[in-house]
Amino acid sequence: MCNKALVYYTSRFGIVYNTVKSQQTFYQGHTMKVSCIGKHPFNAIVATGEATHLNPAIHVWDATTMETLVILKTSHKGGILHVTFSNDGSLLGSIGMDKTFSL
Image 1 (tube, one colour):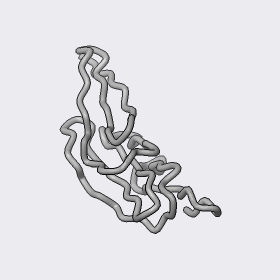
Image 2 (cartoon, rainbow, N blue to C red):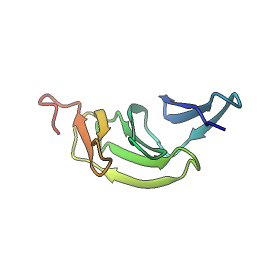
Image 3 (cartoon, rainbow, N blue to C red):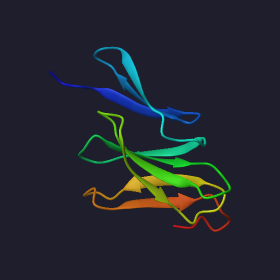
């Protein structure tokens, strides 16, 4: 059977909606509002960035188990605007909400 799921965020939660079972599960690792989301190109791994002026972090988590794999501290100011995995999934890039949109 094919598992089809939608992954999105609201407030400080990552949400995985299983379209077959019509059920939601929640990633609750963030303490600040989530500002962006990116999915790994091959695996059920998701990265979510925070919107905060002080030390925004990127959480990398498993969309199947909802477990945190790693929390990456960043030097972005004002939050994280965008996260994306490279085409082969080996790298993760982020863009900050600062004036120069730091990478």
